[in-house]
Amino acid sequence: MDRDQLIDLTRRAVKLARDKTTDLTPAEHTVAAATYTSAERLAQDTAMLLASPQLVGYVSELPRPGTYCTKTVMGRSILLTRGSDDTVRAFDNVCLHRQSRIADGCGAARRLACPYHSWTYDLDGNLVGVPGKEGFPGTRSGSAKLTELPAAECAGFLWISLDRDAVLDIPAFLGPLADELESWGIGRWAPLGEKVLDCPINWKLAIDTFAENYHFATVHKNTFATIARSNCTVFDSFGPHHRLVFPLNGILDLENIPEEQWDPLQNMVVIYALFPNIVLSCTIANGELFRVYPADAPGRSITVHQNSTPLDLSDESTAAGAAAVFDYAHATVRDEDYALVTGLQANLESGARENLVFGRNEPGLQHRHQTWSEAI
Image (cartoon, rainbow, N blue to C red; front, top):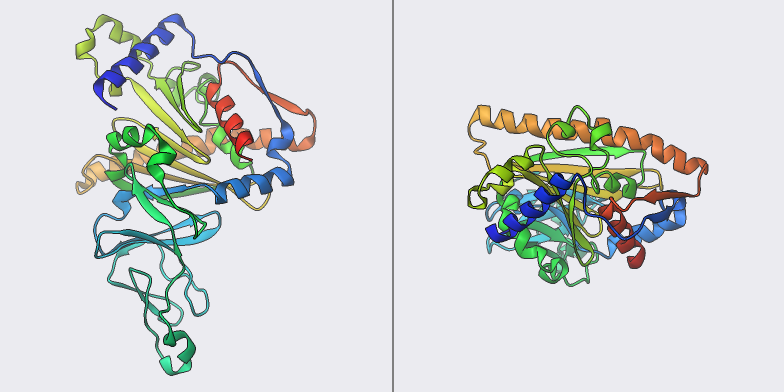
């Protein structure tokens, strides 16, 4: 974001904080409990995600030609590579022989060998080595290659489609957010790894926890609420995506400082909801990515939590500090947000009440659910 835009968002945040209010929608919004518990809705949600572009990581995870990384997306193992031509490619991480995973984690290599029988592939996905090749004349006779999926890099992130026939146009998909996300640079910061939460909550319920800060004063009383204001949010939508600005507790100090001296990023956290299942939390020091997926039942989901930092991780103490911040943020989501909504999921499944309510002060929730409903 350019400074004029940051200043405008800061003005809005200061006014909301001064008035002790938040951006409001025209009315409350009701959502059926079955949204989170229905097998039919789960099937619709899964189809929606399979048909949508998937943000799967930071471009810094493929920092140069000759590197690779692996991801699990909707239960599928995906291999991403950056070839000698500097192009990002994606493949099903499935050997042509016995369907073993070819690689795990991230690294650098000219070729990748399946750990089962050492069938070997280059980073363009071509089969280039078969031990005991006389046993496989049919496989070797053609131009054998891993199943390739559409892949792209945009706004500092890695994107794929699980539909091999799809055409990815991520700038069009993101609209004005493409340049805005690029301007943060977080996709090119140093990655800090992945942490996975396999939880007994619906995937939408997991994402709901990131869509408002109304709960900070209670759920995060001793954690996030010590940093950011509760029930105070600047909201803007961009088609199926939206942006939330959470003002930090000291933002009203800016009223005594000339605007030209403001440092907006020291006074806010910016949350992006990218349709359909991505949450980005951006600060001056951290770029958190939450990839949230439906699992095999309505009441179960998988969250992959990643973080990146602009700090130089070659310094041991700096790296330890960045890892500690990541651990703290992850533990707060796991032990406060997700632990609480596990009980909420149980209540939804009990059938005690048919509906739940999103308030006027929860525009992010309303927008998310409306765009999901329209998409299915």
